[in-house]
Length: 97
Image (tube, rainbow, N blue to C red; front, side, top):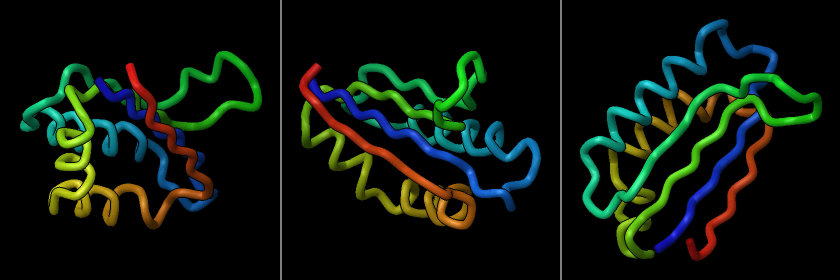
């Protein structure tokens, strides 16, 4: 299995409530995927300083399932509309789960 984690910091121009809209779009998309074991995303609860603003944690059955998720036109649309214009920094890691 493959664990996929992405962390984002929003830019200062990100509208209030945007993280909830982004999370809803990602969850809707994730519900259509084959080879997805688990998918969680959402805004940071701000329990500690120095953390990211938004995170995605997903487990895929294998690399092929993650690649299908990552390269799908719907994922590209979500990235372009909900993340591209608003992300200040991004960190990504994939590892065996």
